[in-house]
View 1 (cartoon, rainbow, N blue to C red):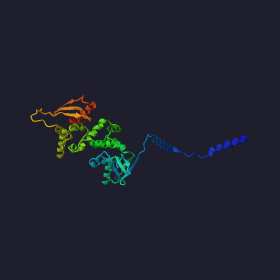
View 2 (cartoon, one colour):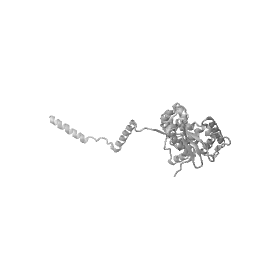
View 3 (cartoon, helix red, strand yellow):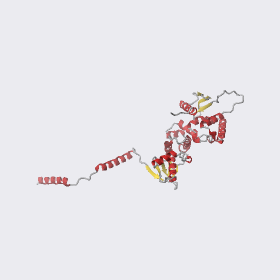
View 4 (tube, rainbow, N blue to C red):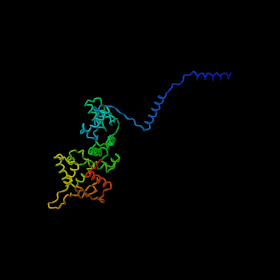
Length: 339
């Protein structure tokens, strides 16, 4: 009897296997989607992929961050022309601006940390027959110091951001975010103190001196090596600033930045007494100093086709200072050529 029961059970099991409906097929597509979703979640959890929050917004609901390093008021169709044409060709904004949410102003939803040119260009297009354009933004949560570093990293390699804009941004940030500690700021930005010092020196140039240049944005970091020594001691500073004010009143007389620097350098030293001998074609010596004020080299004589100089190797400057001063001297008197 037990044998019959075993046979019956086995037969019933076999019949169940034959008659039972097959399981619901997943199919290749279903398995691929589930596997892809699982892999994506694993990547997000591990930090290998960072999820970004992107939105298409009205640029009128976005304000420019007060510490943004670009001079937004100077943006115009000419300065943004290349970006405007690119946006029109693509039909949309490809690279998102970086923003954070605004909580203290009902007139705005976002604050632009990086992307002032994109904001200006999209706004211009919307006002000039392209109302369908939206402002593509990536929304982040960040402190002011984090926002400064993000903005600096994005704009450091951009040619359309002038040295004076970047320099003034660094000088503002020095006190706001780093309590005036230049070493701390250099470490946070991952740059050398000497590199940062040159930008800070450029930003600290007196307003009267900067006004001698018709376009302050033409002032480059390489010029600070020649301008800073002109402001010490006080009597030289007085003569240089007086000459700068005269140049500003005449609109710079159409001179290049290099020519303006030469005029200021000639004005720096007191005029020689009458009857003092002066060789034809010679110029008075000028000492180039590093960021700490240590002498690096002395330009003894400038002639039409030659410059004579002395390296001041025992005056406290470093080889790096000497190399930077020589590079700046070459840039000023022997511009690089292409081709």
